[in-house]
Length: 144
Image: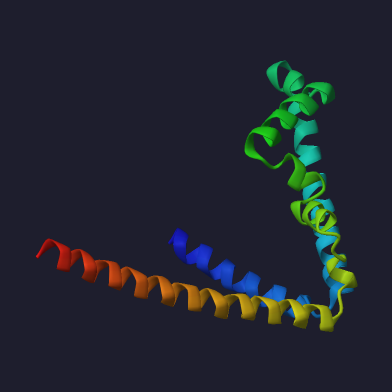
């Protein structure tokens, strides 16, 4: 049952992303509003737990929250990706344009480079297979 639900939402997500990716402003608006409302719910849930007092009041006291959430994010490797994103770092290191600034020509050039690399990789894999076959034959001849 669980896998059915996961597959359903996975396929639904793919369809929604495909449609919204052609309407970037609408996509950003929906994503921004829903993200803020999600975090608003998290924030208010923390406030509710803090008002309960005791351990929860201490756990959700703002300076303590900063400490334990920072440690949790660092331990899971999500600190940098959540705050600025790996794509931003990588594109900065490579001196790349932002995705929104890339043109169709830039994307096509990148796809052509990838296709060329894939074809070269196929040649290398074929050559390695031939070398492996030759080594196997030589090994059999030497053992005979």
